[in-house]
Length: 134
Image 1 (cartoon, rainbow, N blue to C red):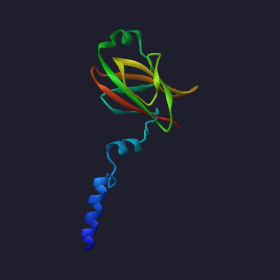
Image 2 (image 1 turned 90 degrees about the vertical axis):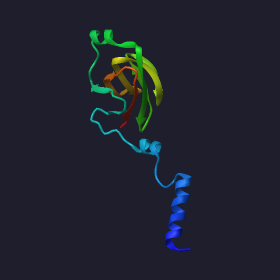
Image 3 (image 1 turned 180 degrees about the vertical axis):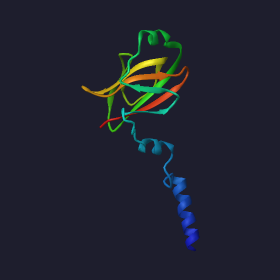
Image 4 (image 1 turned 135 degrees about the vertical axis):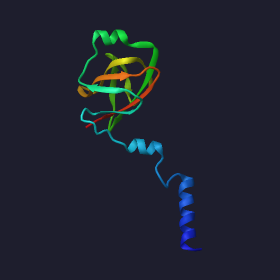
């Protein structure tokens, strides 16, 4: 068998077993959040404003008729996730319904605040974020 045939066989075997190259899930798991605020929006058209809070006008504009969904993961740990002052779960959380509009978001590990700010969630959207845990 020639070197080319052996290489082709090894490559095909690796691809068939899924070990030749990392798939999307592996690539996402290897991705780290390097934003100064410690929170990165991975998917969705959400915007993040660290250390901001919603106003009474923002709260009135929130839409529960066309809510979005939020998934939160923590790079390097776990933490408690709060949206608009309410506990929604321990990260990682997946597909939690949140009102469209500006929402107060806080992620904590015990007494340590990992991220705190204003997350604007578009109507009928799925938003995925990663929080850095130092």
